[in-house]
Image (tube, rainbow, N blue to C red; front, side, top):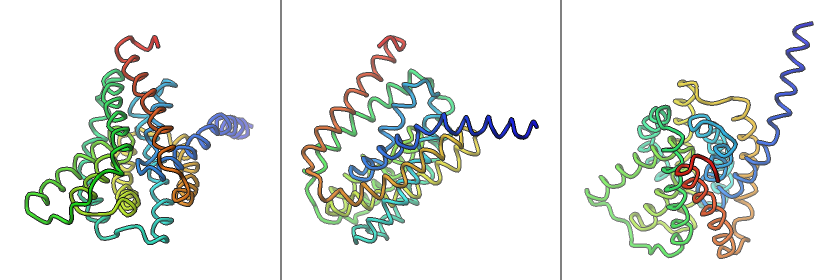
Length: 266
């Protein structure tokens, strides 16, 4: 009898969490199109609903990983992924994801909101400037190689600490510093996220941060959202996407800053 009661309660909990599937789907579509992984949508929603930073971040990373898998499959079929570069930068980001996951346990809610607000503002700058980044040609100097390694490490920290993709770092790096065209840089960043998000998910899980049911719901939605986003990306007018996405992100960033300054009164 108790087994049936437990099963009934578990079914109720699953139904209560189903709203995370459409949230993951929307984030997956946007993340795949823009190249930011979708966490810039999921994390603020969870934070506003009262989720602790480490829980929101770790849950989001499951969605980011799922989205990266489906997006990479789609973009690889379209021939847009630089596989060799994606593997190299992905591996370089792994140590940073470990640091980000560990640090997330000690970040207070107010500090997280301020830092994440800064990341969101940087995301808006990326969205508007990504099409204007000039292709400079590949730079294989020792200085550039060292810079790429350091930037990849930092992107890993950002990805794991905030539950977002490292696209705001990787895409400009690949375009301006390594000579990739935009049509290959954004898809390649999704492949890099396979490494960054997977290692982040592993470390967060070891630390006991995620709720696996919630994370699974987000992952399901994000997986299918990744396929849809990769498919419709070539048909979308980029200017409209820039304005819509940036407006929402800036509103969320402002809410983050106000909540941090006034204790959630706004």
